[in-house]
Length: 393
Image: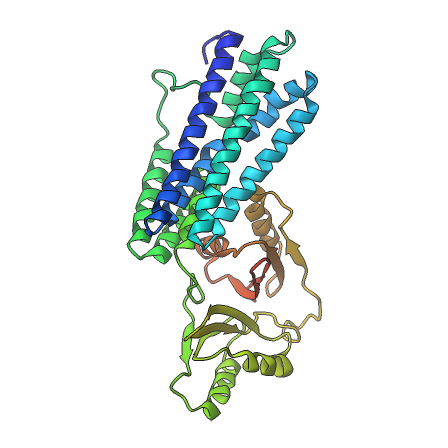
């Protein structure tokens, strides 16, 4: 970056905040517009989440490494702490909107994200940056250069002349646009698999682009609906045409034929709650029950046999919980994959999360197809618990 004055650095930061705010507001309006028109809004949500992951959150992280410590030294410690807390809230809201299935809720959260950033940037512009501009010990131009080095993005309105384009980033943008179009055409599962394959190819060499794909994958996964057993497909057992006396016998026979880690989707014309009590009585700890559709005319439940149900693992050891609800969203998937790679064959852990980890499953399928097991143990609405295991030798 060429040498600039402190005032020019200050103005460049103001301009960049303005640009970020306008981009977020435009994407939030796109979500609200699709919802208001009754159209599919998943692609608009994916665009908002991707922009957060690619632009806003890296900018926030760079601020925490550069201008925030300088502001704290200038006596603004309380302000800095509050602004860091707002960064955490933005990250959390970005993850939550990707998991929402209600259009009105998604539109409301999109506007909340845009409004929070606007207020956050205004406070930074009006309080924090002016203090640094007048502080003789602070080098605002130097801090801007450090932010540029940290994020790889220029805070000035336009890139320097002759700056080389990032060909991989361009290809990823095109791929995500194509995946979004594929999802809009009713091929969301296929779009998720393509995005997950791109993530697997990028995670080693370009973690920044891999993070962007992960964010988009959350939006794409929302469009898959409550499919059974995604990314893989489970057999469907529709008992609606069977005599009531034959239904439970057929269901239990199908369950007994399951291999560990497999499952089937039961389709019924009433809530199969009595059946679940029978499963609890006869197979406690040895089955999974995931409600997919709850009436009023059709009920669909995925019934599975855990890969290492109690009494089947052969070790007698209690498997640990990996609760990531208090872990920052940017660190969750990395922590989960690290825990998986540490597993011995046949072992597993129970992932505890605050939303359906469907995007994570697509990534597992892209990276470890045929090597892992996935069993839902609890499916919301506030807590999801999934047993993730390493297939036996």
